[in-house]
Length: 429
Image 1: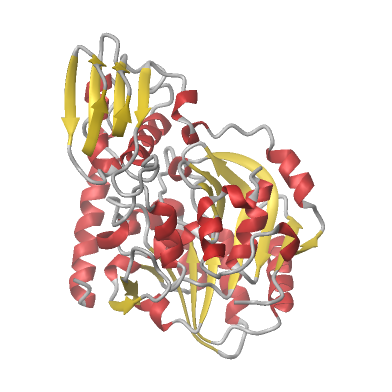
Image 2 (image 1 turned 135 degrees about the horizontal axis):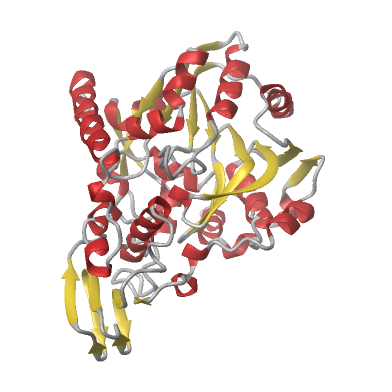
């Protein structure tokens, strides 16, 4: 962990290679040491779809710029780009839809889905819940790590930047473990294997709403740092949060990863945090608070069984994710949905679904009160996945279903087959 923690803020108005390279060059010079050995670049490619999700991932042109800059250092023996995208969608499909494979060919760098590659089981010393992790080979063997997040608001963790990016360090088979009311602790657990040497944040266009189908907002910024905590301290302030209000940041500080006091971070560059925060002040990221959605569906969030806190990262996160995809694919779907109610967790009080269906989602979900509904439907799972809910919610609430998308469904099937062929080839089962 760096003692002199700094964050560089540079205005960059568009994804222009020359402008981006100048900032990246400055960041490496500030770092004071050169990449060497096996270098891994990990971007954010959580979801990509050419029709409705083109602002959720780190822009490939910025990643390509970093690739070219890194390749210029003589001590680099190997260079790769690696990522594990959102659960249930093959990462290779996201790579195709986002232009990452095309970028990889252009810059002659392999783009690898961690789920298709080999991995190593490692023990963790500072974690709370993950005592071991299946660590992707590229992370385990890397001598120098460059994390490249896309700055976004997050539906249940306030912000996506350096620390939250580490969820994409997990293989799909472990991604949903503790992804419930323990999610923020989980994020910090992963930091033990995913502690980057350099963070290059794409904030030229940031995302809000639902982070996997983010709506764009032009911020015109590249942010570079030598410390993930420092990077997130600044990112939180830019998005309008006090650092201590971002729970995974607070947990990381408590575990000894560094101070989250703004004064502990040296901020450099040509634009201030205050000015950037002024620009984002009017953004409404509606999926962070489901009560703000314009819909006839009513949402009731109960506590989880593990921490007696709202189960923010479990079934309600899946509800947000499912509805976010449905509405991004067909805008207006949520507004025009049928009347009803969705309950997650152990809810104290009455539930009113009006003349519609009350959905109880998740194994632990229970209502300590009366339910007023035409009928009650339960969907089991702990935590339930957004993909499973996407097969149910459209039919219950009269919304257009992604399950009948003639373009996407065949692509998911074909890319899933390719994924398993590559896993077998690399011995990754």
